[in-house]
Image 1 (tube, rainbow, N blue to C red):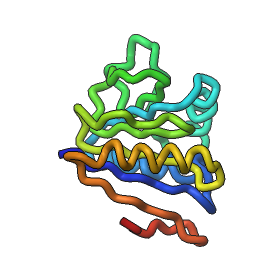
Image 2 (cartoon, one colour; image 1 turned 90 degrees about the vertical axis):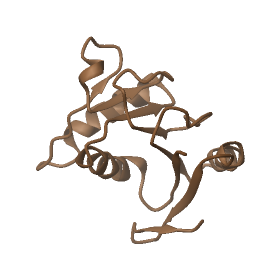
Image 3 (cartoon, helix red, strand yellow; image 1 turned 45 degrees about the horizontal axis):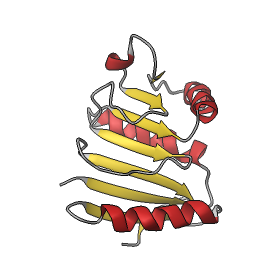
Image 4 (cartoon, rainbow, N blue to C red; image 1 turned 90 degrees about the horizontal axis):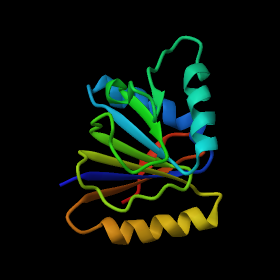
Length: 148
């Protein structure tokens, strides 16, 4: 059974939330692959992960390099798992179709985008089967509260 976490972003944007979740993933000894909706957004997130905080270093790479298999965090627009990740993040309108092969799926969507919210509802129904689903929503102060 795969744990699937739905993160409903509202007061804080993806760029403020994703780095901390990736840090926690790596601290657990897991590898992560982050599926992004477009190459342009993958490149923006790549730059952001190098500079989001002065006192941090989050090793990662963009898919398509000979070092993909060695990356603890890999950004991609594809559906493969080149770094053997335990956790797959779906961001920027990338929507999970299956949880196969992962210990955890993290699906992050913007509450300010009605189409993204609708996609999340459809994904919830489609993935419910044999998976453990939880729904997390941000409070005004940025804290996460488990709603389902």
